[in-house]
Image (cartoon, rainbow, N blue to C red):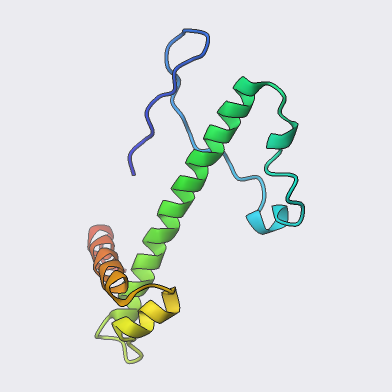
Length: 120
């Protein structure tokens, strides 16, 4: 995954690289109180709020991309013809809550990821 472009320094200095913000707790724990979202509601300075919200956006994007890669790898493994319990594309689509053509694309993507990472 490509590194996000550096963020301009609001003070006019050199750009500083953006890194995804650490997720301080599991999202399900924060869902109990919808008024609180990673402490953003308590940030009063709009510059700080934009910085923290941007960090969270990058972290969630990175997490979503990584989770999708794991979905694809799992789909490819489930479709592997060498497995005695191999699932059909339709069964994988149903399990992943996808359309069947999307499941086929995920299986192909997962196979490509497995080839890139080497044998397991």
